[in-house]
Length: 288
Image (cartoon, rainbow, N blue to C red; front, side, top):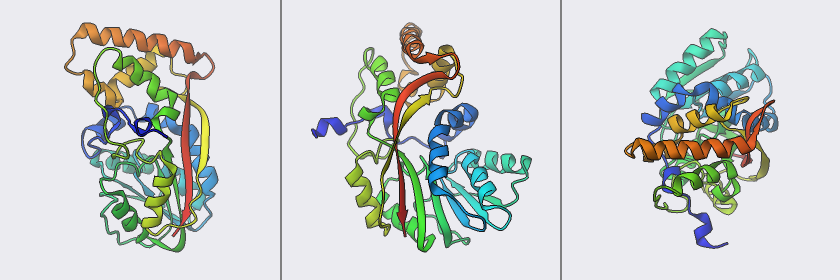
């Protein structure tokens, strides 16, 4: 593999999840969660939680996965949602209260360094919540300290950008109009763990063993299930990290990019399901 294959564009790197990106996620919570629901469901199925288990949901976002796990572990179990974004944690608490998920709690902290009184947990879980650590080996060592010996961690992370047409085709549209400098391979961001050997190295250095990497390959509903091409354009232009590079561009350029994105999404639109684009994620169970 050529090193250039591993370069992700600058707009894919880590964002300020304690601030700007947390606010964007909350503003588009339903669409974000609906968009990645197929992968989240697959990860939950593989995790197969049991009644009575105590679970830590790392990078819980708006609390959707935390509540789903709480239903599986039942009243004898308990789930703690952990996220660095204050606005998402508050939204998660409100959401859990509305559905009477009394076997949940939510903590605003950085999973890379947090020391939780509730630890050790039986299980750790993270749907796209672990790829933004500045020092991933140290962060996973810290996570390892939170789980019981012999406990299990279940992760979902994105495969390499080149294996995710949904992102690269959108980026291709933007790149045809403005220059986007590359970032370093393995830099914190959505696609940081796309290299399988690097992912295994991180887990092993943190104390996790017997990591299995299971490919999830499917279609991702851009902008959420049943979104129209227009809906998808509004979603990506208001919420995806790469859109921030267009904030200072003139209106005419933005309109041209939106028009080309609309044409792209129209190619993938299915009236019964939405804008369905090819995607690949990695589901990763490992033992502490």
